[in-house]
Image (cartoon, rainbow over all chains, first blue to last red; front, side, top):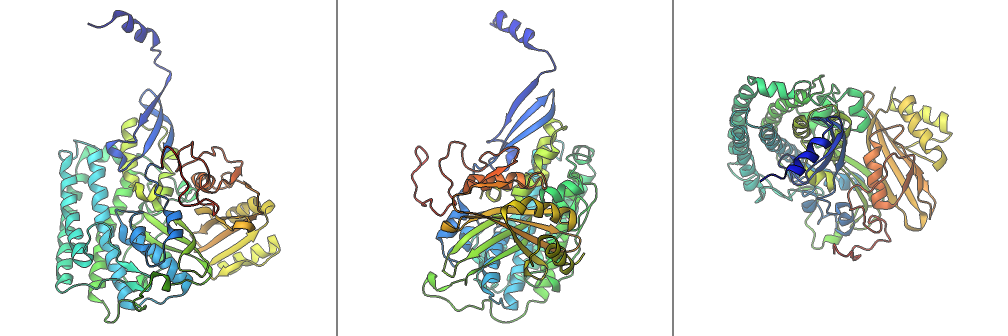
Length: 387
Length: 150
């Protein structure tokens, strides 16, 4: 039986105007990892956000100082475990830039090939989980999620037959790649991207014809062009805010200058704009994959002979900043080398870290339910935020 | 503005030729000019994009603070550096100029113990608030025990 005294206290204590502090996370279904947001609410409106990160910190930068250039790439893939191919690529490129190591053309094309497949796989996971977060109105909740995961599996199958691994690959190494494509792989790859291209049409039709989806994304979580640059967001976020900034275009690496692709830009800066950018990127990535398969040059896949000891690969004293366009934006490695076989200092510039840093600026003023939609549209991967 | 013009502007303003190659400009200034350089990068050179900031521990040479900003329209970057003498752990914050410096400097404080003067909210960001020491300092051994965590 209810205690009448307790009821009285609640009635007396309710003023209707005071602020409420609500804790969201660290274990929250929409956190896409472990993230805690301490929300200050007025009614249902968020007035302040304190973002708490670091739950997944694994001392990557300290660890990198203790591992040789040949050992670390497979660990580097664990920074962004949803797009491991591009994370590894950023690391090996920083060592290649500092040591002025040439990469054979075949290896460059293979790098482009896997980076774009990785972008497709990563965007599949983003779309699925984001729509799942926004709940039942989107084709039964889990429908889009399962569709996206089904297609992502096909890309992971390709990676498995290429490297033997489905999530963390160890594909790149200083001077080239570790594996070449096996027989029949190119055909399987073409069929996969063709299939995914067709499926994207289905997803788009499901979502863009859905009034609930549009209501929950249009005008929600607007990042202005100025804020985007000031905080340093990158990838689909900055392109959704009207800045045509794509590192594949701005500073082509791994022979991206050979490929014909579009850099989608939207000006609205809201969740829907970020969604639109990524939906075009899906197709542009498949285009690049086809071009890479068509034009794949013959030749060696690494400019460096195999070494007997990990200490044999040394990088001369100097520094380099290498960046690649990952699925979430600018993934960079700032490397200080001291001539030994290990970095003196390695700074990871994770795209998700800077992208997440924009949340406290854009969430205030929105309802609690929108926090989930905005978080998902940022596509944070907490391995990369916390490193 | 091209990167060559930017180089000339920097030299004119700070009295020393910047380093770096091509469109990747690098400029080191004394600590007292750190905030001036950042303001000049933003207002004078149009570097509105904040890429990252970090630090490097040079052991007995002291710490070096690094920040990289970009002019996306003109396609050049500026890597700014300043040197803290050995034992010095205080540096002006760039948050008044670039909002992106907020989290980056918190991480820098967390990992190197650099106190950014003027930072609005200088707390640890990745490690627990009660963590002792600053792990990316070279004097911090990899196997430093940390009860009750390790």
